[in-house]
Length: 64
Image (cartoon, rainbow, N blue to C red):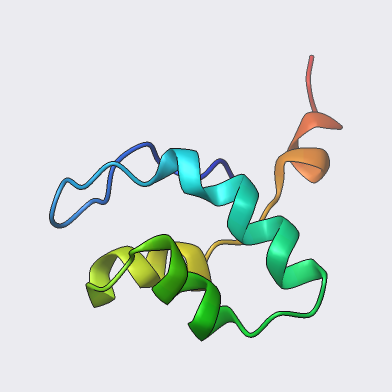
């Protein structure tokens, strides 16, 4: 739902990079080049960004 602050596996701080990654990929840039440019070299950190599904809007509909 929300991108984690740190990588689950290696502990690298990655949360601050999400907004930039999202904006650049929506503009049409290649995800691989954006991740390389942001300094995400490890596959564990890269999988957080590539596998993330933003469900915040859907979940907020069920707020009591």
